[in-house]
Each structure stands twice: as structure tokens, then as C-alpha cells.
Amino acid sequence: MISPARALEGVLPTLLDYSALPAETLRARIRARKQELNAVILGHNYQRVEIQEVSDYLGDSLGLSQEAAATDADVIVFCGVHFMAETAKILSPHKTVLMPDLRAGCPMADFVTAPALRRMKAEHPGAAVVAYVNSTAEVKAESDICCTSSNAVKVVESIPRERTILFVPDRNLARYVQERTGRDNIVAWDGYCYVHDDMVLQELELARKAHPNALLVVHPEVRKELLDRADVVTSTSGMVAYAEKYDEVIFGTERGLVDRMRQRFPNKTFVPLSGAAVCGNMKLNTLAKLAWCLDYRKHEVVLDEDVRVRAERSLRAMLEVSGGWKAPSDEEKALELAGVRPSGCGCA
Ligand code: 13P
Ligand code: SF4
Image 1 (cartoon, helix red, strand yellow):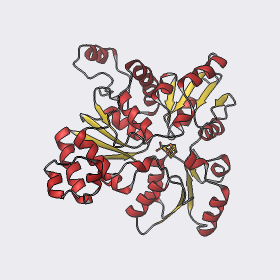
Image 2: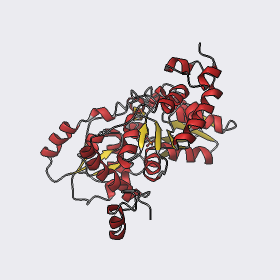
Image 3: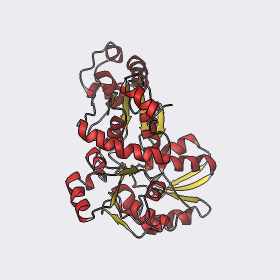
Image 4: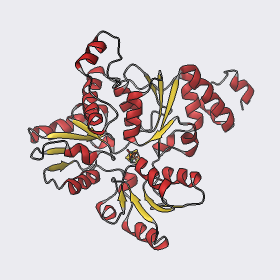
């Protein structure tokens, strides 16, 4: 095994060597490289606790995309899944966006492809396409506006009521939005998240029986029968806010969030609705891979520029509806064209 001393001299040929290093050595290495590269680590709420601890910003998809659009770091290291890192690259094209493990994809995003969406659009001429951010850059490029779990209702309400909406790819989020907005013209793609869709009523009833006074907070990716019984439906960052306020909560979401909340509030009672709710894709990122990724500046997210520009339009339409970015004024556009102000930065 390679010694930590040699490791710090830079003799670290493989990822396996990194995983043999003590956590404190890895953390020190990450801190040093981050400073050297002017890098920022963005971490999703489902990341392993070890990753959450070293993240500069932790959040849900909306918060992370707002952060990616606003950061002045040169390098963004994205600890989440592929569509999240892609979103960062779409919004910050001049920055280097890295992922510790390229295999960390989101199976829900893979339910819909750009050609399949084009066929759906051809069947519904004039319809608006709302793409949940859990989608590929190519699908975003075919869409009118994106949404996340925290702004889906607001995004759908921003579209004229009489216009048909094609909602991709999450059928559960689509149904939730349909009920909240009372619209009957939402056509949903038949996709889902295997982690949330697998949660069943029996698990909910068992958790409720064991904790009758607990608040039941669920993510909108769960099935209707669970959504109907929840006290609160919200995004992962919304859940963190409830953990800060309440002493006893059952969380209908991925385990990573619950584990971190238990660590932050050891005297509170936080219960996962399902102990089996683990997103294996999110868990692919480890401290060792993060240190390796910063050292070797890998794996870089690269996008086709035409796709990126079209995807940016639908993401910025979302950010304009939900805050965190505003369209430039004519004066700002002139400054962008002259290269005085960075394009798309959204700052005043
Ligand atoms: P949030 O935007 O609520 O963090 O959700 C992302 C996600 O992938 C949930 O499964
Ligand atoms: Fe995708 Fe589900 Fe994992 Fe979220 S929890 S990243 S939706 S697979």
C-alpha cells in the first residue's frame, strides 16, 4: 500500500491508492487542491455523509443550479448525478465542470430520449414541454422550460392554462402538479424514480404506527397513494428545513438525507419511510474519488454547444420563474457582447 507521505508528494497512480488513504489525509488534499484550482464543491442532499461534510454548498436540484449559475469559481466539482453536473455546465459553459464518477447517472433521466420526445411533440402540436431537471441536456434542449421538485407547480402555472403541457419524464411529479394546479391538460411521460416509486403504503403505515406523532414529509417523486397521506410534500432542501424545525419526522425520500439529518440533530427522531430507499447512483461518489478527481481534473463534463445553448434557454426560463437569475437588460446585453460582463451571469 502507498504511504500517506508518498501520497502527499503526488505519487498517486490509481484510485485504489487513494481509497487506501485515511479520511483526514483525503480531506486535507481536497482542501489544498480546491484552493489551488479555485474550485467549488457542490453536493446534493443524497450524497454520502463524508461528501456532504466537504461540500461548499449542499442543496436540492434548484439550489444547486442557482449556485452553479452564480459561482465565481473556475472549477465546479459536482457531487451528485450526471444531469446535475450537466446542468452546471449548461449554465456555466466557461467553467470546468468535474464529476468524481462518470457512472453516477440518474435512471429516471434515461426514461426519455430527445428523438422520443420529438415524436411526442409531433403528436401534440402547439403543446408546451416541461422537462423535470432529471433529464438529459438533449431532452432539455427539446423543451420550453425546466422545473425541479421545488418549483414544478410554479413553472406549470406560468404556462397559459389553455395550453397543453407535455411533462417529462416523471409521471408521479406530473400527477402531483396536475392535482395542485387543477389542470386537465397535462400529458405525462411514463417515467419514474426507482428509489421513490418503490416505496409502498405498507411501509408508510408501519412507520406511522411506530411514530404516530411524527410529521410525514415526502418527496413528490413518490406514488399517489403516499402523496395523498403526507402532511407535507416538498423537495430535499424543503425536507432539511422541516428537520430544522420539527423534532419527529418520517421522511419519504432517499436515506442519505435522513442519515445526515440524524447526524446533525442527534437528539431528534428522524425515520426513513423505507430503509431500502437508497440511490446507488448518488452513492458512487466517495471521498477518495473526489480527491482523485481534483488531482487529475477528471472527469470533465463536455457538451455539444448547439445542445447546450438550447438547453440553457429552458433552464434559464425556469430560473427566471423561480428566482436566482434574471434576464439581462439591453444595457447588460451590450456589456456581454463587448466582453465586459460574462455572458449569462445573471448578476446586476
Ligand atoms: P431534489 O431536487 O428535491 O433534490 O430532488 C432530486 C432528486 O433526484 C430526487 O430524487
Ligand atoms: Fe434519480 Fe431517483 Fe437517484 Fe434522484 S433518487 S438521482 S431521481 S434515481
